[in-house]
Length: 139
Image (cartoon, rainbow, N blue to C red; front, side, top):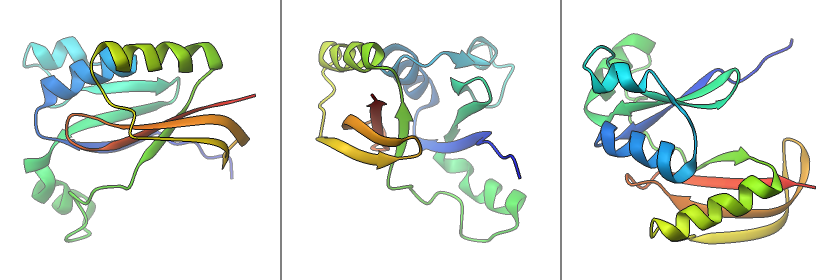
């Protein structure tokens, strides 16, 4: 089977604040961002890679999502963290943006195993809703 991650749902309390954070601080381009801002899309997303997005879903929709998936009580659960892999230059640029926006790097690591092998360096930081993001680069 040749599978790829299509999207993940990130629970947020304020979609516009989350969209701004992911676009301006993390540096991910918005998907349907203008449509959402204009009231034409129910939720915005940000693009991680060509085939992968993060949906910024309002927490109050959890019961609705439960109904849609058919797995009662599953929606709204936080994930421990998710990880983005970037190049070294983008990693350094992200650290500078985090500092500029006053976002604390809450954890660091080196030589950490992941999908592409051993990453040289990793950082962790929260989004405005406390969702933990790991970012790493591989040599």
